[in-house]
Image 1 (cartoon, rainbow, N blue to C red):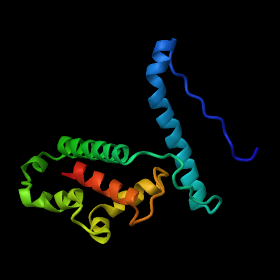
Image 2: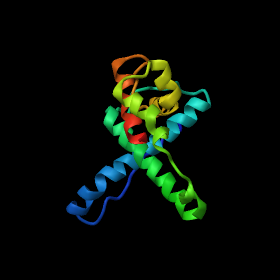
Image 3: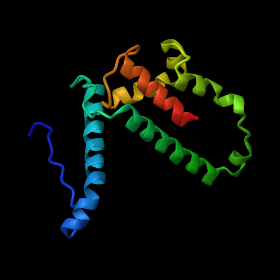
Length: 146
């Protein structure tokens, strides 16, 4: 065999349950495929295919926000002192400037560029830095960071 396997997931005992389970099951399968592709890229067997699992800028931002919420909940559950940290109004100013369009591409890249790149590497977009789509993604990430 050439390293390929078949991915199957049971979706439930009836049609209604299967329909409810389908979006989550597809996401899990796409994640498994992406992990396999990432391993193949790291092993030098495959090159990265950007844009394979496209998401809109708002979908990317929502996914990032959900990841931040999960991380926040994990920290709050394990470190009681976390809630005592004070976040000032001025800490959000760079993100307000990013969303409003005041920042240059270089400034946006310093602010949220690592996350824009993470979603490119996951195959969720192929927007090059400086393009309208890239700025839209970066600005959307700024909104959810606020």
